[in-house]
Length: 122
Figure 1 (cartoon, helix red, strand yellow):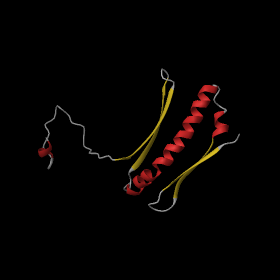
Figure 2 (spheres, one colour):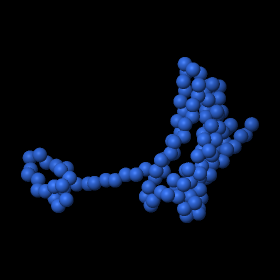
Figure 3 (tube, helix red, strand yellow):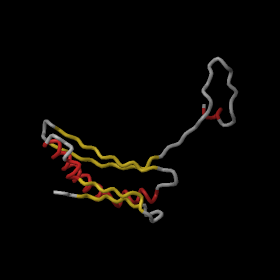
Figure 4 (cartoon, helix red, strand yellow):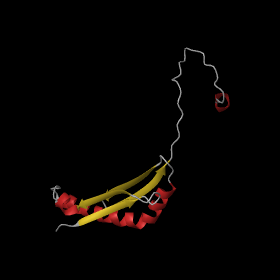
C-alpha cells in the first residue's frame, strides 16, 4: 500500500521551515495488531490531516503573531463513543501565555517586612 503523508509546518515570521514530518502510515499501522484499532487510527490520521489543513490559515496567523519565547500548543483528541459507534477527532490550538513571579518561601515563624509594591497587592 505505502501511503505517505507529509506534514510541513512553516514559520512565515522568519521565512524558514520549522519542522518537516514524514509519516509512512501503512508501515506504522502494521505494528497495531487489532484490525479495529488499526482502522480507527488510520481514519484518525486522515481526519487529523484534514483538520490541520482546514485550520492552517489560523495556525499560521497564530505562529506569526506569537512573540519571542511564546509556544503554540496543537492538540489532537480522538474520542470514541462506543454506545453510538461514533468516532470524533478534534484539533485545537492556542498560543500559550504565561507570567511568573518568584520569591523566597515564607517562614511563618519569622516576621516579614513589606517589600516595595507588595503592600498594595496584599
